Image 1 (cartoon, rainbow, N blue to C red):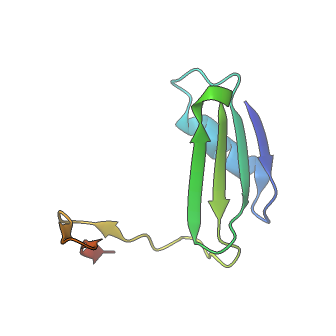
Image 2: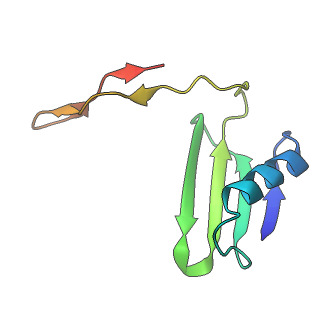
Length: 87
């Protein structure tokens, strides 16, 4: 796996976390890029055809990061949807 980190976070620690997460799957040709996002706290993209994964993290994030998740089905109408969040 090729790994590149252009953030201030510890590259060795990040790479070890990725390798631990994919240990049970083939990943020899994978390319992982960790970089700063342009505004959101985090986002990512996976390109299956070229084995590339981009992980974008906010420059001002502090860790541990308080992650809120959806705990109920989203409700929607003709113009939008929403879901309750929980920490």
